[in-house]
Image 1 (cartoon, helix red, strand yellow):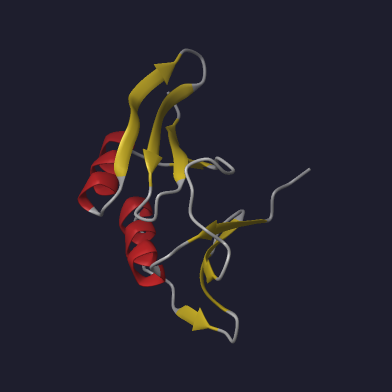
Image 2 (image 1 turned 45 degrees about the vertical axis):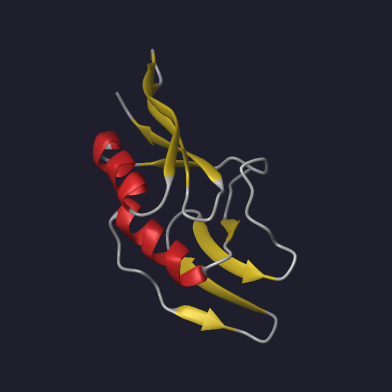
Amino acid sequence: MQSIWIEIPATDLERANRFYAAVFGHDAPPVDAQETRSIAIIEGTPSVSLNRTEGFVPSPDGALPYFAVEDLGVAVDAVVAHGGRVIEAPNERPGLGHFALVGDSEGNALYLFAAS
């Protein structure tokens, strides 16, 4: 199985777009305002869609995506600086790497990962 697409709910799509661009160091993609939803697609493998759709509500209790970053400390600092929060401080999982559980600007939970 290969993941090809992840949709992350956002209440404030512009804020979420700025948050993810700052944390992952890319330009914020354009927002595509459609009739029933608005999305911003972050290209990658898999691609990530920040999505504002009625009934698709941000929550720390839903799916828990993991994202690889080059420098975990820099990424965690960007989380806090851009409206997110640290849920579990960076820690090492021997043989696996370093992980931090964070909340994004919308209230979703995600893991940041850096290889050892």
